[in-house]
Image (cartoon, rainbow, N blue to C red):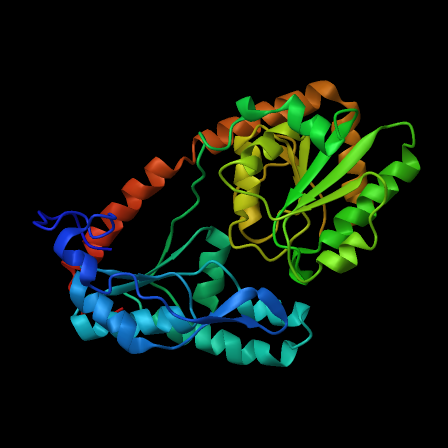
Amino acid sequence: MALPQPNPHGSPFAKDAGDLSNLALHPKLPRLPCPPYPDIRLAAPLYGRVLNAARAFRPDVVHCQTEFIVGRIGQRAGAAVGAPCVSSYHTDFSRYAESYGVGWLRPSLTRYIARFHSRSRRVYTPSEPARQDLARIGVHNVEVWGRGVDVEQFHPAKRSAALRRDLGIDDGFVFLHVGRLAAEKNIALILDAFELLRLREPLLRAHLVVAGAGPELNALCARATDRMHFLGNLDRHGILPSLYASADAFANASETETLGLVILEAMASGLPVLATPAGGIADNLRDGVNGLAFPPGDAAALANAMARVMTDDPLRHELGLAARRWAEDRSWQAELDRLDASYREVIANGPHADP
């Protein structure tokens, strides 16, 4: 990111960027699917293309959003052009190794992540538990940032009776889950809880809607009953906000989130959240205030929480209102103002300050 400065060429990001249109400001890196998880794309390590873009753009600060190929290239390019580098820590990849059956890789991944972020002038992570995780592996220059949600894009007013009819869910109570369908997200537990709910309360007309894709999609769909709906990936700006607002409660069973952005999106949409208060989710979930908490891996407890929000209308209403208020206090505008101030502080300390 470059700080706002007078630019005789206009915005380098505009389609009509004038003299800058011939510069490699948007280098394209060929990508290949990761074999165990095709939705993850691995970029080719074409350092020269990124370096040329950095030299053309002359950034004041380089922000590396991923720890792997693109992020490492960004660190090298930033050092080459004399710009301080900062980085983001959003995902505990070392913990994911356990979910994918390669737990023996976890120590190596942990060491790599520690080395990567130790090169940064500042590290941004979206929750206090994630900051503590980094501290335990020796990364200390960490700022909790990025807990924002677009409260206009995700809003209760986007509830759509037409969408509910189109999906065949207009006749009952709708539990929603949104996210990657991957082993570490523990979506199977939500399905288990939903089946328990239907066994215990056969007269309650409930639906479970799951939006997202990933390596677990086929296995989860194979378990689907007549009131489970798998929608795949949806347009974030068109359909997804309406889907959130058209549901009645949000269910999440992940224990590995550094933030859990879907939790904030659900709250902004006025949904009570049923989740395990682990990792970054613990920063936002308040049991009995804006949602209901259940212990890790406890399908029976989640089923109890589902039954409770279905049958207690005043409780569900109060939880939904409080969830919306919580999200409104975490709008992106405030978070971006904080980031601007943080960038300027990093730049003022110079590119070669001790991290």
